[in-house]
Length: 46
Image (cartoon, rainbow, N blue to C red; front, side, top):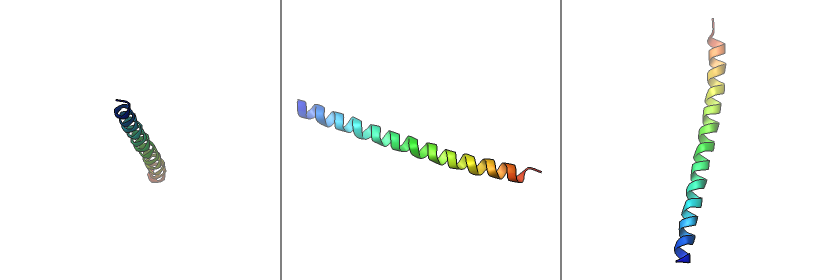
């Protein structure tokens, strides 16, 4: 029983790590895209 709980918690921990990794990636990518987009929009303004 305790072994199953350990495995379950490990899986939850791993899932949380994956979710945080994906969230960080999305934040970083969106931030970079935002910077590029802002720069290009200000650059292309007439």
